[in-house]
Image 1 (tube, rainbow, N blue to C red):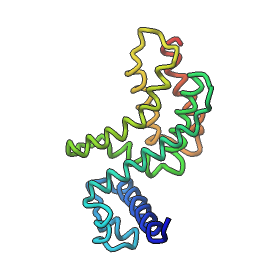
Image 2 (image 1 turned 135 degrees about the vertical axis):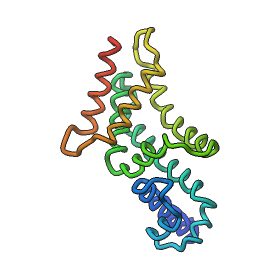
Image 3 (image 1 turned 90 degrees about the vertical axis):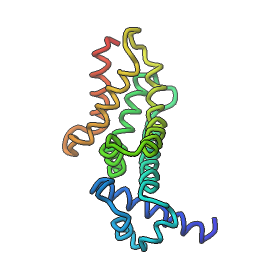
Length: 193
């Protein structure tokens, strides 16, 4: 990789990281490109070289957040584990990402996604979110659940419980792994599986 390309990639990473910080702290609506520029030390006009709008930058930050969480989930899953163990591992990987080093990025997904956005923006965010949720769809399809259990609603219940930990989690309480185990166990017990 050329030095020039490496510098451009570093600058892009710096802008995305600053965007994540600003969006997580103040929200999308209250964040300006000037706020992001100030955090990076880059001139505001220079950010537009990489992103034509704040919306485009937000999509890039959201995508980076999804990518970080997907990596955390896939890293946590042990090949060959049985379905319930894989689900606990995936849930633990998700919570580790969301509550650990990537908490700033995860906050952006949890707090900003539900807000009303333009349909084109919403469609892009949904496509990114679906890429992440597909990891759980595949695992849940392998679970030995009763035929009467609607797997879609079961997955949505689990995903909602996992996402909401961002709001109530305390670092001096149970670890992300323990929380993941307890939440999966809670749903498992309700289905009689």
